[in-house]
Image (cartoon, rainbow, N blue to C red; front, side, top):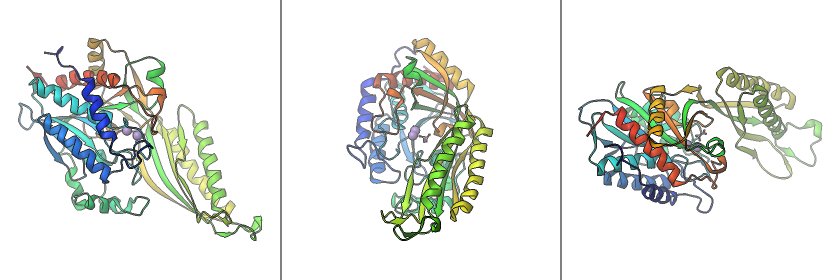
Length: 417
Ligand code: HGY
Ligand code: MN
Ligand code: MN
């Protein structure tokens, strides 16, 4: 039974290219924000592919899309596989969709070969993993894991001030029912995600696949520094409360603190907005984000905590007021070794080269690991590039990842011929 079950590269290419059409920044990579028109068009495409593969499709109360293939054992826990379909601003076509397409292809291969498993299978397309629109992220998986508060849907807003709750309503969802997305205890046997590596390791070592053992911990905060807008010409230098000076020192602090923490700890200010933003006005307000990550919780907390006390010093030094909003705090996560072992076994049978590695990017698998056994398989990223229009993975490389996951799913879900 095993040798004929192979993914088809051509279908993978077709899916990725079809989904890549739905972007708000044509010519500037992928911008597919949750609960947007691009989200809807992509969801319609995925739904059509799920139905064609014989799946029963439903959208949960958080907006996640699932295609379900019943198992022989009624009421048994499901094996879930997939990834997210939202993107960052001006991102790439593979970050997220490669994992959704993996699910579609596994579903097709089982459907066309009439393979049934004892356990049911759920093919997932998750929303708002990136937080590109509302900040934070990992929203679809946190909704399933019961890690999402209803009030956060009112607090998290996009750049136009639209709350998640309002965007959900406009997308046909009822934010008051988001709790219904929580998966009952014991209802999942496993969660398997295929994802592009978003780093240079697999390509530089000439390997086909990566099997993730640990995903780094992540802290994301939003910082607002309030100084005083003043005339750039008439305000003496020693009479200014320049918000941008404090923010600039903060950028240098985060960079230095992450480097000093070492062991792969990273710190980034990815977004900074200066207000009112006139060339002849001393900046009165600056908004910026921080993103700190480490596989070592102590290092992660040290950078974040020292940054907090640094901001207090900035208030005194520059006569500004600083407020900080927590957007995401996830500790480092070890994934399921049983699933990692199955990945290794399948790759061995197929002759694909692979290594066990860490993920510097956050993924829904790190949240799903809190409610079920979670596995994450990487395929190479060309030049290690991601979160940019240049992001690329060969379709043949994705095919190899899907082949390994087919065998893994058959083992986990107890396939019978
Ligand atoms: O930010 C991340 O690590 C992921 O791309 N959401
Ligand atoms: Mn990403
Ligand atoms: Mn991703």
